[in-house]
Image (cartoon, rainbow, N blue to C red; front, side, top):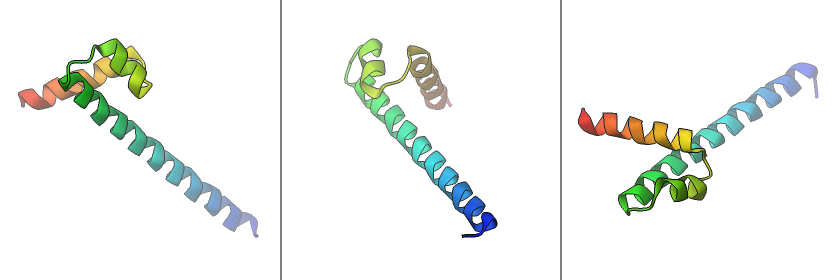
Length: 69
């Protein structure tokens, strides 16, 4: 395989992997919203969706802003 083709394949794989990561994070965010709606404590939610408390707080703040608008 030529160097240019290999480079394009590597670039495509990077884009694909980034898309998968973004999708997984969006799913984790939606799950966190559902768990909070069910009354779970934030610490347990963060553990369940495998994110930091800081990330979880950011998500919930974003959600509150969207609900206010």
